[in-house]
Image (cartoon, rainbow, N blue to C red; front, side, top):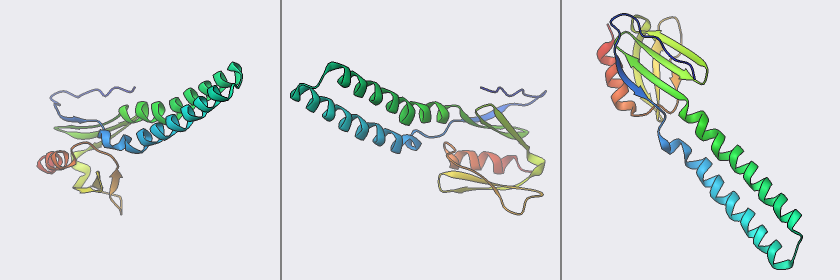
Length: 145
């Protein structure tokens, strides 16, 4: 994961990860996938299907569970939204975006995310799934020049 380097006199005011409610649909997918797979495995056990085919279904279930649940969890937990006393830093995986407060004109909450108005852009920049958006919005507004 990319690390940010703070400048001289720069202090982190908020370091937010996306809220866990963002994992609601991957979690429901995991429950449904698990239920259907293990019902199939139970049926295979009751009808006497070979152990090799049963083990193949278990392997397919494990791969699908990793792909449909664990991958979104890891991707979501690697996203950070950091507010310092001089700038806003957004980290998504290996990419790091930094917006100094002198370039920000406004900040507004919108559907669980944050709209940040940046000078030079006609539309505000939208950052989805920011944790504690009300607190982050207040912090950004207090830091604006």
